[in-house]
Length: 206
Figure 1 (cartoon, rainbow, N blue to C red):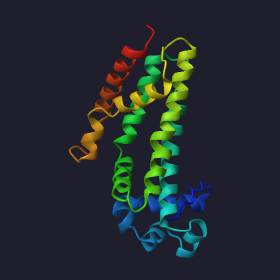
Figure 2 (cartoon, rainbow, N blue to C red; figure 1 turned 90 degrees about the vertical axis):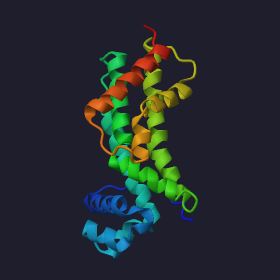
Figure 3 (cartoon, rainbow, N blue to C red; figure 1 turned 90 degrees about the horizontal axis):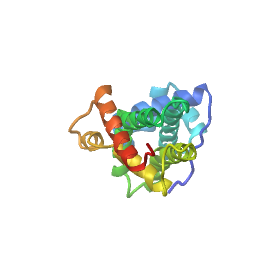
Figure 4 (cartoon, rainbow, N blue to C red; figure 1 turned 180 degrees about the vertical axis):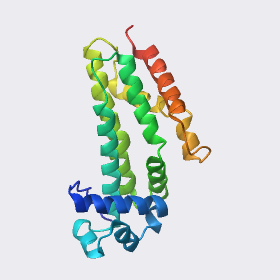
């Protein structure tokens, strides 16, 4: 078993390889994806690919981490602390719900579940790069809001997990089971607003 951690290198060639790998993994899954196809999609040689990544598992882990990092950075960068708590949480909830129903998140989730027993490190990478990282960001935002007197929470860790679960209401299971593959921004925003209303009813101070 390869327990190497994602390497998070940067540069044009790395970005090229990751984009090609992302395309093939989403198209063929983990088991079906071949290094030859990835190299072709990235327009690089296999030798170049192997100079950056030791094997397919490490490449998959890096694709997952880079995409989750990108989405987390995008969501956090949009949060304006001068806005009311309801507006900030709604924006965060919208971003979270949008990501978990995205093609990338859904396909990656299914790949990790399918490969859980053979390659548990894939699931661990997805969990750490996605849900766990998001959880830490939510904890930080909730802690700031508590300090400002906007929220009253005794267990921030639990409250953050509860917030994440509220953002999944209805849409996550529909997406996961293939009942619905596309969600409009209006539908996602509806879920986000209801999540925040419920959360503030429990933890809001006003």
